[in-house]
Image 1 (tube, rainbow, N blue to C red):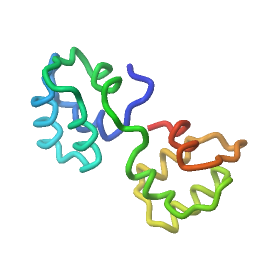
Image 2 (image 1 turned 60 degrees about the vertical axis):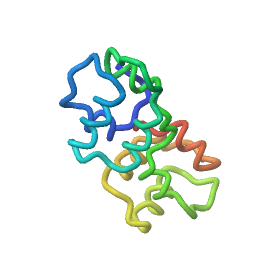
Image 3 (image 1 turned 180 degrees about the horizontal axis):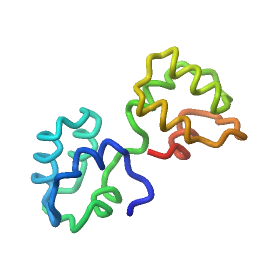
Image 4 (image 1 turned 45 degrees about the vertical axis):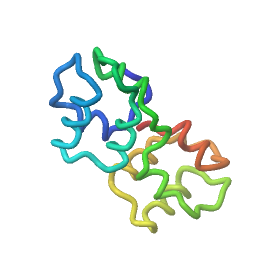
Length: 123
């Protein structure tokens, strides 16, 4: 299983049977009512490639950080601990998925930036 892939991609592509083309992947995601950020990320897949499995999709998708997590952290003061990030996300009205992802961060680390969080967050 891919080590780094957004949960929304797993959810959107759950019904898909592999191997699949980019067009089939996008169609499945659209039919699954995927988030706009997920559709944008999947649209970045290379054309003309047949993806053998979900791992191949995750390796090729250009989603560095969940859009939900990124939006939840806009305006947070860094450095920040997991607890500070969660408090900010709750005040910002973050989605349950974004709060859950942030809740998985290490509790004994001071994150220096949103990029630092995105490299660490379990999507």
